[in-house]
Amino acid sequence: MEFLSDSVVLSRMQFALTAIFHILWPVLTTGMGIYLVIVEGLWLKTRNPDYYLHARFWSKFYVLNFGIGVATGIPMEFQFGTNWAPFSEAVGNFFGSVIGFEASWAFMLEAAFLGIMLFGWERVNPAVHYLSTILVAVGANLSTLWILTANSWMQTPAGGEMVNGKFVVNDYFQAMFNPFMANSVLHMFFATLETSLFVIGGISAWYILQKRHPEFFAKSLKIVLAAAIAVAPLQIYIGHLSGEQVYHYQPTKLAAMEAQWESTPAGQPADWSLLAIPNEKAQKNDWEITIPNALGYILEFKQNLSEPVRGLKEWKPEDRPHLVGLIYYAFRVMIAIGFFFAGLMLLTTVQWLRGKLVAKNITQQRWLMLAWVFAAPLGYIAVESGWIVRCVGRQPWTLYGQIRTVDSASRLPASNVLTSLTAFAVVYSLLFIAAMYFGSRIIRRGPNLNLPIPGTEITKPAVDTTPGEFMPDERPVEAQQ
Image 1 (cartoon, one colour):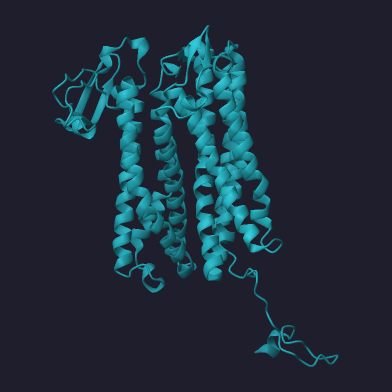
Image 2: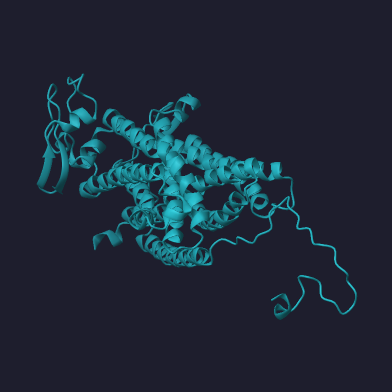
């Protein structure tokens, strides 16, 4: 176990652990913030109390994820100063400011209005409360904007040049709007929204299967489905555009994503590997199923076959990604989940049009509801898989083509990094158990359908309050019967 004495490898493992764990929580808050804006807007428009009760119920999941997201996000960012100090020193004039924008613009906005959103229902004007919900959702999604802007710049650095080991920015806006930025932000935005939609839909389907408030949760499922009709196909299309960009800007990553060792010459569309067993040592696939010419057409080379598709062998081993099998299958898991979501959305839409999602029929759609419950965690797996492809596929570079990962890490004793890695693993495991406990408790308790609705008053009938007589709501049960 030589890696235990390599501080660079251990620092990479620590950052991977904290990043993989942290991303679980903001994925839901960024998407669910938009859902809360939708249901509260519907309540204000229709005054249907169900929409108000939905806003109150789902906000419990929001605050649970927000709290753990904050607790795990701050230590992750601190690592740029502890474990990756040379990288931070080299790129801090741009990368540091963008990370600072995420904290000052996004986190502060979200935190400032979260209290009003959670506790201001009967304390502030409904318009003020709705504005707070909107600003919380905006703050959550601004985090996506700034984090993906920073990470996209690491993938396709622009707007400056390396001078004496430091990146000097000549054009700040060109650095911000680097080639990967737009598609990356959109891809992550729709990933968080899609994940949240299928989590809400999966929980709603569970209640329907249990025949607990089926009419109430049929509403949330229909709202989710209406949004997924647009989100699911858009996410697939934006993912396709991102794949095209990888070919143009990061051909080594594309070769790893497709486990393609040999180059396909210009004028010939590349085959697409459906499944394979990559063998890095032998620089080949031990076994594979391929679809002839498919990769060329996927990448839209049908009208431009003058460009080759380069294989991994074109680069020296130290200049290309390793863990090819991980990159290859993470990419396919992400794609498979995206198409599963689109298929489930299409099937559920058909059933909706057939009238099978009304309260009296929806409890009979057992297999469909089971599919939604099964889909609930898949968005998380797809997001994690996408980040594995994005970051592991970028290796051996931290700043692509400019700064190598081995030169980005702080020179720390391996024992120190191993200690902090172990501590993170223990603490994050406890946090995960706590999150599952409190999340399951929210689900077991279910929504409180007896909450008073703001703006409504219960008028009691006038009665004679002669001493010795009971008020109507104070009589013994026997007397009421």
